Image 1 (cartoon, rainbow, N blue to C red):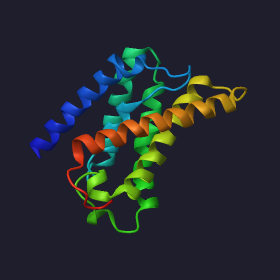
Image 2 (image 1 turned 60 degrees about the vertical axis):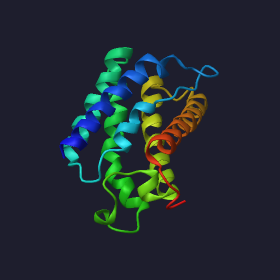
Image 3 (image 1 turned 90 degrees about the horizontal axis):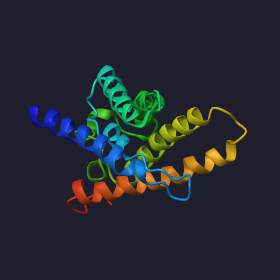
Image 4 (image 1 turned 45 degrees about the horizontal axis):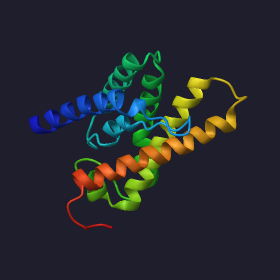
Length: 173
C-alpha cells in the first residue's frame, strides 16, 4: 500500500513538472497541445474511492492552472474526466470491475480495452478544456480540430509511455 502511494505521489509530481516545464511549450501548427498530465487519472487504481479520485483530479488540475494562469480550466476539465471515469469503465467493460487488475494499463487490460478507455477519457477532458477556454460557438470547428489533434497527440504520448514503462511482454495484444 505504501509503495502504491509513493509511486502515485512521484507520478503526480513528475507529470505536473513535465507538463509545465516541457509540454506546455509545445504548440504544433498553432493549435495542437499535448496534455499528458491526465495520464495520472488514467492510471489511478480501480479501487480508488470516488471522493479521493475527485480530490486528486482537482489538485492535479489546479496545479497545472497555477503554473499556466488558466484560472481553473484544467481543474474543471480534469474533475469532469475523473467524474466520468467510473461510467466509462462500466460502458466499455463486459466483466465486473473486481476481475480487473490493480490499475488500468495496456498490459493488464489489453490494447482494445485500454485504447477505448484512454480515447474516451482524453476526448472528454480535451473537449471540456478547449470549449471552456474559448467559451463561444463561433469557432466551433476550429476548436473541434484542436480537440481532435490534441487528443491524438496526447494518446500517442500515453501509449508510448505504456509501452516504454509498463508493458513488459506481449500477453494480451
